[in-house]
Amino acid sequence: MTSVVKNARSLPRLRAMRGVSLVEVMVGLTIGMLLVAGLALMFGNASRANSELDKSVRHIENGRYALDLLTQEISLAGYYGTVPATAGGTLTNSPCQDSTTLATALVTMQNTVPVTVPAPVQGFTPAAAASLTCIPNYKSGTPVLAIRRLDTATTAIGSLTNGVLYVQTSHNQFDNYASYKAAVGSGSNATNFNLKALPPAGGGAASANPARRFISRIYYIANCNDCSGAGDGIPTLRVSELNGATFTNQPLAEGIDQIGFDFGIDDSPATRDGVPDTWYGLNGPSAGATETTYMSTRWVDVVAVRISLVSRSPEFTAGWSDVGTYAAGQTNTTAFSYSPPSTALNFKRRGYVTTIRLNNWAGLRES
Image (tube, rainbow, N blue to C red; front, side, top):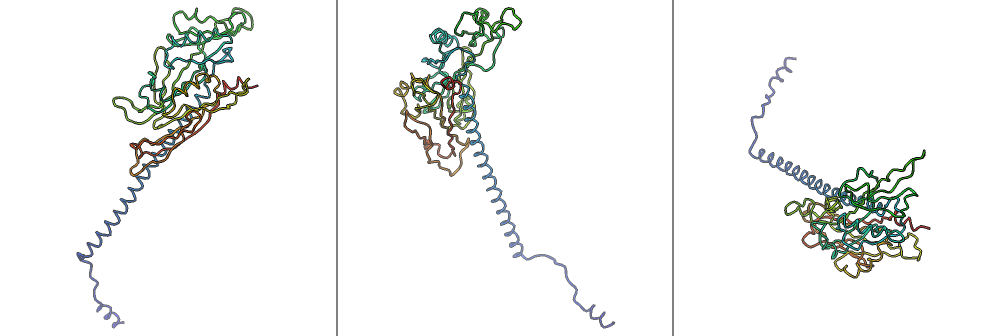
């Protein structure tokens, strides 16, 4: 036992580490720098990927939202409530006419036999759209779509807004008035809108039938979303809406780079059946007077609209070059493709196409 203890005491004592050599320090620093560089690269790539994903999500959603808005609006085009009309007339004047001028046109229509109402939609070639005064910051080379209908909600005659265009119909057989009345709200509403509703079930005098606001909206592509000053340069789907003597303008969806409207025309058989037989477009720089003249007598026969839309990311992507072409409707009956300008190739884009039936208009033609 004594020899074992002596041997144990004779073992050399372990010494604590007192420092590292310069080589070891440099090796450690190098390893640390490599780790930091790797982490920085990983976070940088993740940040860029997240940024690109955000851009893609935004411009895809903007395109979807724009298409959804237009689908809803076009689906309601040609809604005229209980107006006793089965035929349409074309408003040949500018869609920028104010309520008073439009009321005069409607009075002419209401006195025709048979009674007519404005066609639900009317398109304009890029050349024709350039001269419209109610679509500020219009982007050249894009078509324009005007939509007309009545409000789905009625307004009591005593609550009409001055300067706003309304249409009133009769629900009373004793009115001796087979048409409708169109007038601008004023202090003479009781005189201008005197058509009656159905008599009360228990008897008595019938009250004035409520009126519906006339809605005229123009959808177009503008050069900017925020158009203050020089504008932000982001192409945007905007709408100008008739509001009395003026038009109110607001953005709907940013990043809408190009749009195309093709019109489904019901021109066969002679009695019409509510089904589009011919598709005709007013899109592209070559669309002009020939296309405008062709459609001038056919707006009343349009029963469907096909939308071709191109959305782009709101911000550019470094190193990206968009050299593709996108379907953007037709020039008359020939397909038209949109190619991004050379100054804007570093934006990502996506195309959308959908077709909307004008149910309120086409339904009147079904046998």
